[in-house]
Amino acid sequence: MRKRIVAGNWKMNKTYEEALSLVSEIDNMVKDEVNGDVTVIVAPPFPFLQSVGKLTQGNDLMHLAAQNVSEHDSGAYTGEVSASMLKSVGVQYVIIGHSERRMYHHEDAQALYKKLKATIAQGMTPIFCCGEPLEERDADRHFEYVGKQLHDSLSYLSNEEFDKVVIAYEPIWAIGTGRTASSQQAQEMHAYIREQLSRMFDAEAAFNCSILYGGSCNPGNAKELFAQPDVDGGLIGGASLKSRDFTDIIKSF
Ligand code: PGA
Image (cartoon, rainbow, N blue to C red; front, side, top):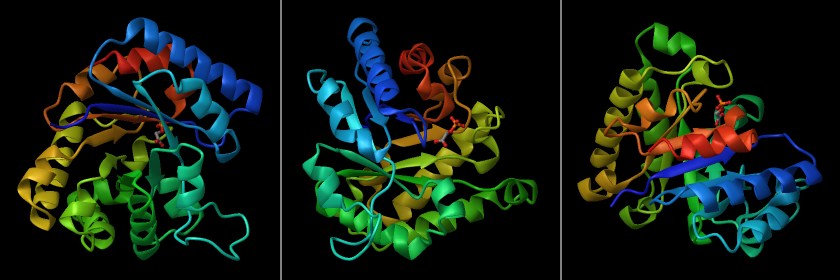
């Protein structure tokens, strides 16, 4: 069965103290209010991973993600963090190919493929992000654009490797802009993504793959988005920095 997932991508926000209080609040609210079959993920900045992970250890619903990983295993790569390092501090999920990393850090399809491999090799789950810029949507090339992103990084994975992958569809024009994709736009892209996956991998694996929506998701629009048959949850930026909003989004299933 497909997992229902809500993941909070904290991006480059919060100091250590602020991160610990945010995660404690989320942890308490989830314990008190969420009784369901949902995987909650928080993705704090690298320096806070271990401490945040320790705080959520007793809560089976809560899981820990990193926002990035090196494509290399170890060695002279100043400033980079490897998959085995992440694994060793309790990380279970890794966000790969976020549009901000593609744009500002020039991560290309081949590098993302290597990051996927490195993450899966350590037994962690990649959350692979895709999504089109506004020009592509306006030119009606969004399906083609996202299809190519999927093909260029994922198609070299084996069926067994693909089994571990979670996808996040995040149209760039909706990230941090307050402009959300409509539930219909999200559903049609998610269905398209699932169909592409079923061409690259076996149909059952594609059916079971969780596909999250991201881009200005908030407590007001999550319910309608999550009600779509191919939307299996959300990757949340801004609203994941407020414990009340994030928990309300989790409760929107
Ligand atoms: P947003 O970010 O919810 O602030 O739009 C989503 C993301 O970039 O993952």
